[in-house]
Each structure stands twice: as structure tokens, then as C-alpha cells.
Image (cartoon, one colour):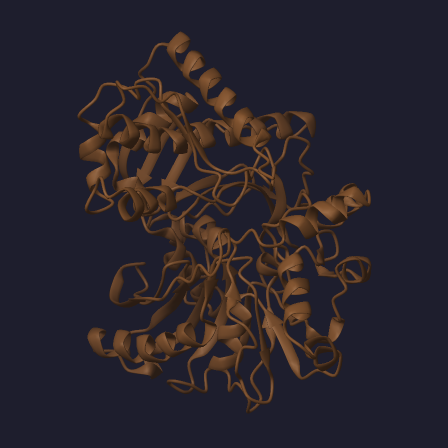
Length: 505
């Protein structure tokens, strides 16, 4: 019998990967390439969507070749992607009209603040489950339509298309200008600030508020569904899942039931708590979002906390301060000191996100004295992730209690590249006062996309089949004095307050 496999395209913030897995959830082969980061102005972050598509064209054949796998053995392909990143392109040429605006970008801050002064924030949050913020796609799409001459009229005529990166890749994979499918799923659509969180459909009122023509939008399909088949670069591969990266990590951690959660530490730090079919509206600064939707089944919801600058802070320290040569060296440097020396870093490069939501804030370093060394800065950089997690865990438990939901979070199940940092894992356990558990498979995003694709086509038919693939790798328990924890958390809160008040002329 021919061995069957599933593949995942993991289109991330810094790189794109194609990974092939067998039925046991074991990675068989991987091809990965980084793409360019563009920073045309302070606070602006862009990607070249055409460059990313060209990488995908190379990565799929490379992954098949390196694994010695024929394309006919792939029974499903899952697409997972950086969410909120926004691209518009010409349907007739396949060329983007502008570089994609990345989820970290802050150029729409003034637009968002202007809308807020109109008193529409509460209505937007009720419809979308998300606070009015420059984090989401709608303000970026509105900005692009204004910045690209003639694009609004062309969009209304159906010749300009919009999508997050999942839509862009699926359109190209399924034929592009020759009949490519223009689709998205509820996990990505819920990040645009244009989808109604209750109906999982585009909301006419939101389109009106952001001045978006409906013709530009992709069709919303269930996350786990038989989308279509590839035309390029390798024809005939069934595309059977589309799912945002953080929701994919939830699936990869097999957190498929209400009350289960995951905390991903990659470029950013993202906590998702599965609330099942219950839509829990946050009162404490989290996002009510879609967890996933299986074809023919109700939507599963989640509460989400987001910290956009986790690994991105380490990379900034490496590139801009030069005190480490590789990201991994930050743990070694942080271990040269016993504490942060009173230094705290608030890396609000794109504003403060959950649970604070202050778009205009900027990053700062406080508590600097002549005593502070490179080691203290390194430790402060790691600790900022623990404090951010603490804020999100507290908000989550408060939301669950306020909603009368008999669930709470007492364990953080982690994944992502930064979880290799054992010092950081212990710090998160200490500051959050929870157990931190890392599975043996710490990269859950691509695995989750593969699970979704395989489940959609029947390679797996039972959640227990996926759970049997999950194995504990390491566990950390809180080990610091509670009074010390509270003192450090209070100092962090003061630093956040200072960042939220930063409003340069």
C-alpha cells in the first residue's frame, strides 16, 4: 500500500516553510527560506508578497524531493499564515499593487484614533470580538485603497482582490490569473475586523465604516474543508485546510476541546484558550476570535491574548544593539546576572496590545543606572515575555469568571522557537505562578496545519489519534517567593503605564 502523507505551508513573519508529515505526525522533510523585511518609515513594516509566492513555488518541489515523496502520495495540504498581514493584487495580472502591510505595522494609528473619536469603538468590538486597533487588517486595507490610485474603482469592478496571506497563496496555488480561487477561512477573516464574529460573514456595517467595497473580499470557507487542488507549482495536490498560524498551533497542540489552551512564543507571544462553541466576550482586553471550523460543524471560539514583540525583541537586540551574535546567546548572557538589576523593557514597537490596547504607545527601557550591564538588559528582555504572559493569563481568568464559565487556566502549554530557552520557561512559570509544559514537538504551527489538512480528508478520523502523538518534553514549576513575584509585577506595571503615556509630538 502506498504511504500517505500530508503537507503544510507555514507562511510566517520572517520565513516560509513547506513541511511534510507522515500519519504518525512525524516530520519527513522540510524546505525553508527567509524573505525580505522592508521598513520604509519608522513603524512601517512591509513584505513583498510576490517574493513570498516565488519562495512557495520552490519550497513545495524541494520538500517533495528531499523526502523522496511523489506528489500523488500527498493526500492533503494545509495552509497556515501570519495573520492580519494585508495584500491587494490585480486579478488580471497577478501583480500586487503595493507591498503587503505586515501585522506589526503602525501606519494606521492616526486613522484608528480618528475612528475612535467618532464613538464607534464599542460597536466595532461587539461585531468583531476585537478592540478597535491598528493591529487588524481593515485599516490597512483602507489605507492601501487610498494609496494605490484607481484601486477603489477597480475593486468595485472585481479586478482588484484583497486577502491575508492565506488568500494570496491559495489564489496562486489554484491557478492565479487562470481561475485561481479567492478564499479565506473564519480564523483569518476574524482578524480583518470586517467579519461579524457571530455570523462568520462579512459585515455590511463594518465595510461601510472602513469604506471597503464588498467585491474585493474573498469567500469565507470552513478552516477544515476541501478547498480545491493545486495547479502550480506541482499540480493535483488537494488543499484541505486554511487556518491562521496561532489557531494552527492550537490544533498542533491538540487543544481541540473547550478549556484547553496553548501559548506560542515565536516572533510574538500568543495565548489562545479554546472556549468551544461558546462565544465569550472579553471584558478585560482580550480578543474573542475563531479557534477553527470543521466543514459542516459549528464554529469553535477562543479567547486570545497577543504580545507582538517576543522573539522580535531578541532579534532587535541582536541586530540593533549587537550585544549577542545569535538569538540563542541571549540565554547565556542573561545567566551572567542573578536578576534584572531593576531594569525593565516594554517593547511596544507597534503599540501595546492585549490586554492594554494603546496604539500610540512606543517601547521604552526604564530603571537604567550605571550598574546595568549587557546581562541585565538580556534578562530584562526575557522577563518582558513572562510579564506579558502574566497580564494575559490574569485577563483570561477574569473573563472566564465574569462570563460564568467554569474553566480557568492553570497550566501554560508552550510551543515555538523561544521555548528552547529554559531560563525563559522557568521565568514564565515563576512570574505567572503556573506550571509551564513544553511538548517534545515544540513547533506546533505547521504541525497543526498538517493535522487540519489530514483530518479534513480522513487521514485521521479521531482526535485521540492526534493526542497519541503528543508527548511531554519538559515541565517547569513556580519556584520564587510570592512577595518577590508581586514586587516585580508591580514594577512592570509601572513601566507599562509609562509606555502607555508616551505620546511624542
